[in-house]
Length: 354
Image (cartoon, rainbow, N blue to C red; front, top):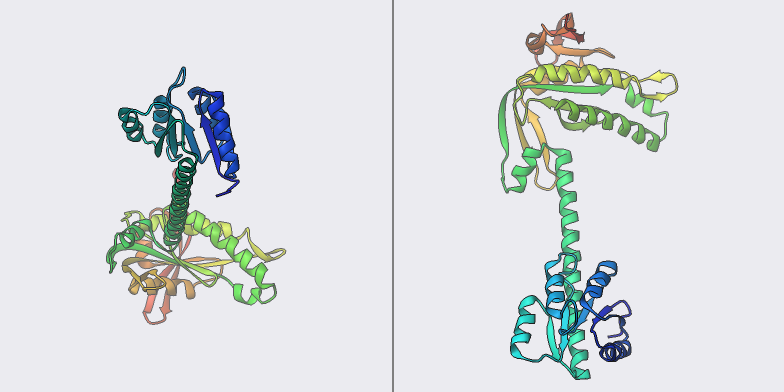
């Protein structure tokens, strides 16, 4: 029984009763503190953690019923077990205390063996409750980690649908804009720095891109090596998806210049953008992935891979949607692998009002 960590509060207006209980508790290897009335008890409970309260009923100012009611109605103290030890042995008093939340009730003068058994049982139940609550807190922390991880790999609305038990998630979105980015010559440059330094620098870049994407209301679908794939217009529709993506692309070009792998060697970004319909859904069972499929994705990828260092290449479809709001330079017709010849444009900047 001798758990030195168990902390007992004795609440009794009789000095002799307090002293007798304290002696019994010390013999059981328990720490005890004493107060002589209910108000002192509530103050002591607010100041220190206790594992059990031994409570008298008849006390001046604030009797044991009021103390018991206050303990059980306060979320901070509710789980502390209370054993009433009182000379009031009428059945009505016993029933009242049990209804108020007392763990047990012993008449005075108490039987030492019975007191020991009741204290041990109360402390054991308290220990089990504490373990259960700690486990529930751990489960909640793990659930929150799981939720956060899910939100890191897919949009919040899709994560909610998965948590709700949907087995197949697939949707067609008629009007979105997809963007691919790639850091020019990053792979070749990375051969000249340590792996740790490489990951740290790439993480800084991608984290900044993530921040800007969130700020613009754009979903990052995935990181591909040193590039990212983003989409605007899903899972929630956005009638300004092309405009939003164009603004983000310009912002990313500004931001990449602040990074370098070597001194005096700022990095360059190659960006490709295309607008159109896509299919979006979740695949996998062990490692879930939210992804996009369709010709729109393929064209956006080609706009990037067949683009020019440091420039934003957009398809004619995207250009038509925002040509009155942004400045463009026509590149002309290019042979897009797997797509044939297509007209493309370089996004230069945004047209300023006035």
